[in-house]
Length: 119
Image: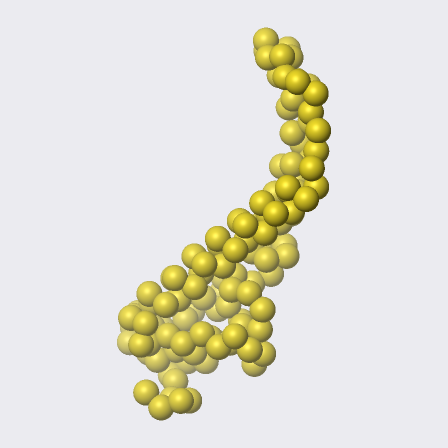
């Protein structure tokens, strides 16, 4: 495969770009994917996933209070913002890796190339 000989060039590795790339590579197309930042797109990196993790974290204090009505005697709850951020970053990195493995496994690694650059 020459440096720029592709059947499909996908701009962005969000859900749609990854799906189109996987589908095309699975049919035998030579695919290139350009993603400037992180695989997974807006939802995984700065949208849906971080929002859900923050929303879950915001509700736990209520669960701790409600637990007493069910016989639990929880200790004093405290919140550590740095821990939440570190765990959010770890989950996003895990999902980025999932997207990368999915792309590289599409139609064999020789069929799909990921360019970490702006298209």
